[in-house]
Image (tube, rainbow, N blue to C red):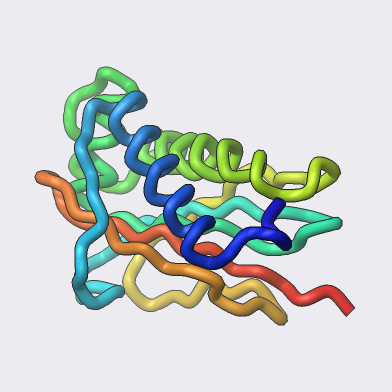
Length: 155
C-alpha cells in the first residue's frame, strides 16, 4: 500500500506503468530524462483524482507534438493540427490508464474520478492542500511529458 511504500518505490512504479501504457496503447517509447519542467511551449494536462481513504491526484502534462502523436496512434486518425475533442479524449484515456494501474498500490477502498483535461500555457492546476510526492519527466521521439503525483494530508 502507498502508506507503506517508500517514495523511490512508487516513483519506480510510476515509471514502469507510464512506460508500459505509452508502449502498449500507442507504440511510443518513453523513458525518464533529466530536464527542467515545465517547458515554455503549450501543454495539454490530463488529471485524475483519488478519493478517501487516500486523497490525491495524478497529472500528465504533454507537449503538443506528443499529445498529437499519441492521439493519432491511439485512435488511428490523422495527426491532429490542434487540441480537439480527440486529443482531449485520448489524453483523458492516457491518465485514466496510468492512474488506474497505479491505484492498485493504494488502499483498496480508494476511489478514482473521471479525467479532466486542461490546455494552454498560462494555467495552474492545483489540488488544494496537496503536496507534490513525485514528478517524473519523460522523453520520447515526439517530445516530452511529465507525470506528477500529489497527495493530500488527511487530518
